[in-house]
Length: 236
Image (cartoon, rainbow, N blue to C red):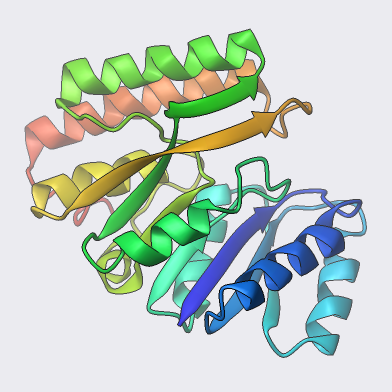
């Protein structure tokens, strides 16, 4: 079974349409599935719409967490998931849903599938592209990683590989990077595939704040790893 996980923050205008779009796509593939949406601090009608949809559809579940913490939302989604495989998508479905096809085929051979805009095509603002590429370069230099996309959407995981990490993953946007580091330490297999992404709407994150956070998180992770090889298991 597949769990489609979507974190949301103030997505009332697109939530229902995009959830139904995902549902239609999964049905076209004839995959046993559920859709889990977790709201992290929404202040519009997102939660009302999500709760109404959950009351009408047995394949859809909706949860809320207090405060804004997309990493916490991810951990909640993994905890509640019934599926053996978890596919994380952005609420605006900015990456092509064909990533689901890649995830279906590759999770039989991998612990994580990374949908990479760098390896595919991306229509995003220049500042966002340059910021992402600089971040990726730092992870290559200081962590010897070959991952080319740490965004939250278009990622797929085997749930059993995530369960030992719940409660210790970064509460904000650094959790994808942490999972990649952890899987490499555990000799897990990560496969990357190129995806198409069109993301031209305004970011839900303050990009300046997000940039500072990401680099601070890189430094903190580097420091922890120097102190202990079991850094993530000992975070709590």
